[in-house]
Length: 373
Image (cartoon, rainbow, N blue to C red):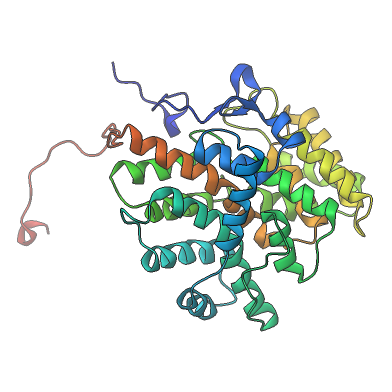
């Protein structure tokens, strides 16, 4: 029997050993490890290794992996030149999409240059691609994209962005956010990567497909939209009135609810705690109170809970990260999950080709153009 559902909701399209999402309405695990344990005790580099290579690293393996990622940050001169020609007005997601595609032409996948090497390369240099372009067009600076002083991707990103040693609390907040965004089963961008992979295309093409999918506000862009909403208001009272008015007009409030989670997003409370912590030192820390009031209104009025994107917005904002770079940070994290799914799809591949129900005109005769009146 053929089952039809809009957006493939509720349809199981494959098996995965990488993550579980929304069991019993809540919960998230990466290869069996609970997201709360990973966020509390791990680092993004450990989680990336877990996703890409299948197990948590030993201390020796982790140090070797971090050293490898540091060495892979440097960009080819040809890619730097391309980034300089991309307009300053371009969306940063377009920059990442183009940068990854260009890297794929310079360092194409071969038997000698395998998928795992490419996965590590992209995880290592995504921040370099993004921030070389950003600093060149914002500050007319050609930044060096190899900085061994910062051992973590989170620290490297903040150092490249602000051109100074990052605050430790902010570094850890970004590190945790990368863990939370790293993997989420068959979401839209991951499924896009698997569809591309199923055609036996190359690794870079699968990643470019995923980046393009993540660009949409219904998927990765929600944190940017949430920040624009929050900054509209100056007080919690103003936020409550404004959101109620938006709901009355049936406007969509981004950052709430989830297709899979039915009770709560297990990642939300983790990132919310970081938003609260960072707000105590921020000049506009009042935005946290506004966020809380919006959360209350959405629950009282619609019984919708915040997802990861909502409090990620203020967390990133309190770290001095421009709103336009929020979704690219999502890419930096999810590269690890996408890579894991590309490997899994390749290991047991079958071309992904769903069917559709035709609702167009019934068969009809062709009328020559001279007889069409």
